[in-house]
Length: 234
Length: 234
Image (tube, rainbow over all chains, first blue to last red; front, side):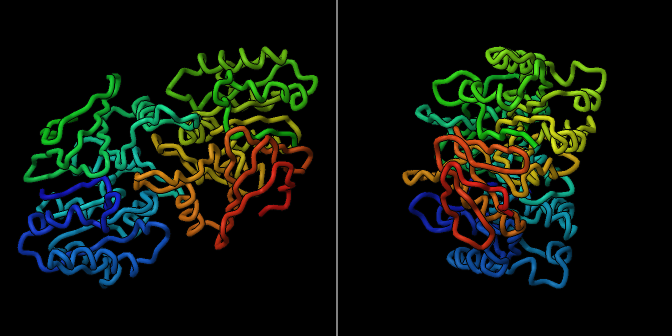
């Protein structure tokens, strides 16, 4: 496998995908065109609008982008893809559409067989075993919460540390993940913005400048340094 | 119908249910004991622990509390209940357990026939048409997102205004609700902490000191004053 699973698409005061562009020619080596999955539709934008946005960013790395919806069938688009990028937005919508278009398992298969994959936000969330640690609103009912399982654990993108000054009584991210572990056993990695997981062959490494927060069932959460090998985390 | 659907159980620097206790003898008039639904298990606490917590608060209003899990069957507990209170926690877990125990429709029926109901947070979320505007993490896969529909719209509890100083790139609550309206047509009321909906006969009124924020499909969101009649909002 070759993949980048990034917490976010956009860092504060940067353009869309700006901090990831230098890594695209490495991930998508010698690839002229990739297939973009716009199903998560952030803010409800259309598949075409979202694909244009991805194409503009990938253009800076000399890579062309075609939306999965522009092909005759989504399954054939993925089967023939030289590389795949799944953008962020709403994870419930993304997962619903991947199942409805019968491509969830096809993406899993081609990526496990070597097709390079990048995800940001919702596109990263589905790289884990399930979407049960998404932060998104359940605006649509998907047929399952199971996702790609490119890594043997769950991912919480846009991980946010508790605000010690908050008077708001909604649950903190840490409380939510603790509730997840009341019903599920796999570890969860909280990826802060600017962090990503790099999958190279079967090695999984934490990348970016920040630490990540690791949550294991019945254990206190702890910080891990960038560069940490997470291949055997399960 | 007689119901209180409250955004939160606990205000900053107050005890559990403290601000709602003066309203309990009105809602549960002449009722000595109510049935508590602890299924949402905040922070993963047990049904017994959670029921004790509710009993302590209700005790201050002279009302006894028995957990739904303490009865022979959950269905009979609800059918015979003089009053019902559903506490907060994780909405996905609450809805899963309500369906698994076959009480979702029974609660709907008895409340529509006059059994007084109070919900806080997740217990309020299910008072709307669906749980699709919950803020919670999908830690378990429920058989449906449809809920009680005591009001003809959706509710977003713990409504949080966007933080103008935030550099975090996760979606704001307003963006999430806009995404909801890309796929769903019913209005959504964002209830700030300390606000609640009062249902009296078939009249629905916004209560508490704060305004609420109302979201309608394809319209700009707007503020509504406390005291506003929401009976015909749909």
